[in-house]
Image (cartoon, rainbow, N blue to C red; front, side, top):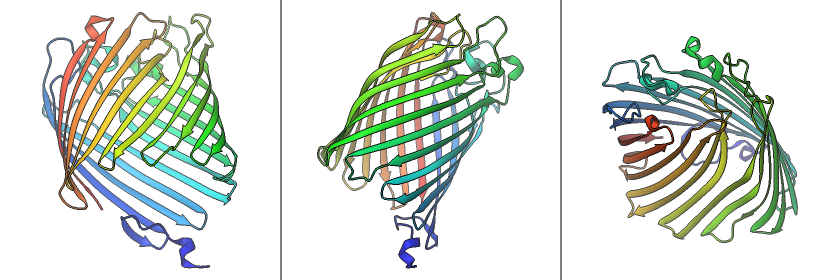
Length: 384
């Protein structure tokens, strides 16, 4: 057996052995938030610091590759300790290439996090001061791909499962936000040319809530998506995908009506020059609602990112985002517009000084839920 069969591609990091490399990283940010509690009136400005430690291990043994990543986030704000958080994420992925036509793998993830609403309006209750809504999100994925990269037809199958459980404020209502989710997705691609493919994508997902708030209907549902699309890598400058199809959501309870709508997922990347990049994204998404009398969130998202290198040391980014959020089976509808401008300065090969300014404005059919805010970040990151 040659040593190259065990070697990890040398793309930085710390070599632990011929088949394993480590990638430690850390970042620290000073942050300023002009409207920390997302309120329409009586805005409160808060400053603080956030530390982001990270360690990633990458391994490759013959036809098997794996990746283990551990991340953390710890904050300290100047408005007291109630809003300080300590989040973590552990992600493990494993892939095996049996032969040129068959690859399979799985991914496991554990996330300990919180809802970013602030204690005074946690889960939409603006007059309550309590600890953060902290939750545990466990998720997994199994994936299988049939067909060589140069084959005319490829088939991909994904099975996803996740479970979200709240750890705090359960007696105040977060127990009714716990849910379990599983989905089967199939993607069939026809490679009509070396740089483009036609595709069919279909998925069926099930959402179950273990507990239902008294007096409200159960929000369990089955969600179906079917879409036709195209994937292309036309030139070194342009690549993207377009999927258009059908989205349907059938609730288990007769208290909610069936939902159907046009479904789409569009992503286009354009590099007019090596120093410039534009990314356009738009899609219809669904999320579980944090308002108990809404069956789910129907979200239309649009975003445009411009990335520009300014010489050898500076990188600037501008991002424009818009989302229309409909709280289905409720009277609430939000429009959220966000703009951000960031600048990175490469101090060394491993260290970067960065700053970012973000302005967010939310209009809502519920006037009390409207707000605007400015968020500024100044940070220093280091990667081995």
